[in-house]
Image 1 (tube, helix red, strand yellow):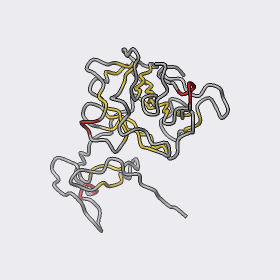
Image 2 (cartoon, rainbow, N blue to C red):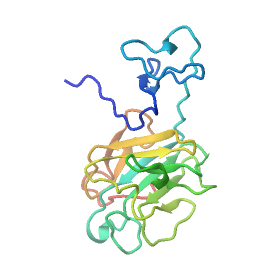
Image 3 (cartoon, rainbow, N blue to C red):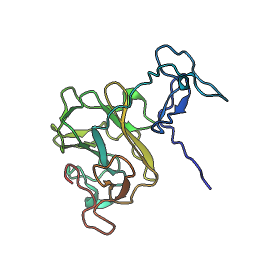
Image 4 (tube, helix red, strand yellow):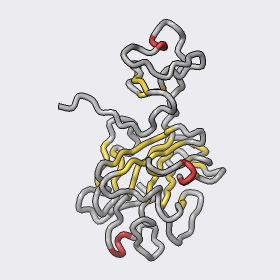
Length: 220
């Protein structure tokens, strides 16, 4: 039986990751200012001693990924961006929900196998309010605005129907939220359930299996 699984999306750069016994999060190995140790196979890291630990804090989760359409339905029903044309990649979308009033200018949103300079970056001054929503479509010919954005034709390399990892990062490059979709819902969006949960969340077919509402970009 599986005892433990580690999904390493953002591995440590030039150093290993170690599990923090206080909160079970994986953090860069001994990332305190006075410690140059990059790894310690077979023994505990130096920060486990009596010296004061200065590991970086986790970026607060003030914005969540709440809805992802990775497999637009066929035909007119799949025209999620409402530009009159159903397109496999352009009608894919990711929806964000603000838990606080946040300036997300410079934040990036994409899948995990896209280089940083190819990730979508929200324009300077973009804000999301508490309870507000922001949607990124893969592309299309439609009016963008303060809460609706278009990527360059696809989100990252295109969201893989069989499963993909979607990552939201702030302007400093810290991961704010990450969704590992191991098999998206076919022909409809997948939604975080409960919508504002932080741990132990389920991802379920949007509207419920068989519902006529297959997605709802910008609304609950």
